[in-house]
Each structure stands twice: as structure tokens, then as C-alpha cells.
Amino acid sequence: MNQGDVYLVNLDPTVPTEIGKTRPGLVISVNAMNHNSPRLIVAPITSSTRKVYPFEVFIPHGTAGLERDSKIMLDQLRSLDKKRLVKKIGALDKETLIKVCATAQRLISVD
Image 1 (cartoon, helix red, strand yellow):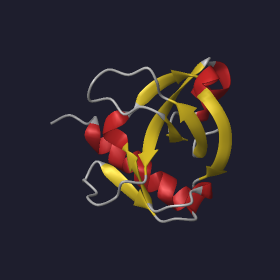
Image 2 (cartoon, one colour; image 1 turned 180 degrees about the vertical axis):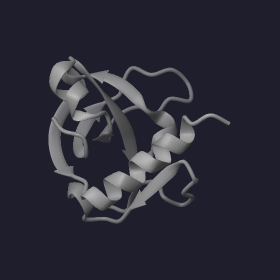
Image 3 (cartoon, helix red, strand yellow; image 1 turned 120 degrees about the horizontal axis):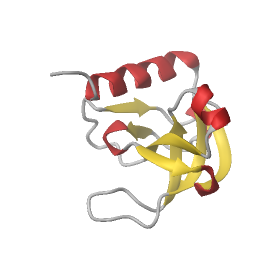
Image 4 (tube, helix red, strand yellow; image 1 turned 30 degrees about the vertical axis):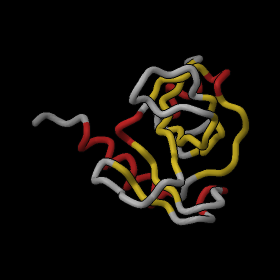
């Protein structure tokens, strides 16, 4: 399990406003965490792309094994036990991963 991998992840149970279901998710945590912790940080992915906000990253179909145009929802980051990962479906290219990490960094920077 490496940074940039895309897995089907089970996000249930949830509370209102949290995204749920079993859906693709991007492993965004650094490999030092991924290889040494029972948890990792995942950004859920949705194929609902009508509106892409500044805190989301659009990815075209065919990227990382995704069959539809999608977006990575960095406002929905989740720390998950690795047992929630169902199966690996692909991996992001380095250029897109850099864009995703830069977007996430802007979300948690000092105002």
C-alpha cells in the first residue's frame, strides 16, 4: 500500500455530511505511515463531476483504473484502518499525485 494507490474502500458507517459506500479512494498518506501503521489516510473519489470545487482534483476516466471521469474529494479525507481496503484498482501518475498533495496542503495551511 503506497501513496498514490487507488483502492476500493468501505467508508461505512458514516454520519451525515460524510461520504459513504464502498467507492474508490486515493491513499494520500506518506509511505512511512503506510508501511508502519495499521491506518492510512484516504481521499474518497466520486464520479459526480458536474461541479469541481477548488478543494477537489478532477481526474479523467482511464486514470488509475477508474472507468468514469471522477474527482478526488480532499475535503473528505479519512484516516482508515487498512481492513477497510477492499482491492487495489490502480495508481495515480506522479504529476497528478503532486497536484493532489498541493491541493491538500492548501486546505490545511495557516490562514
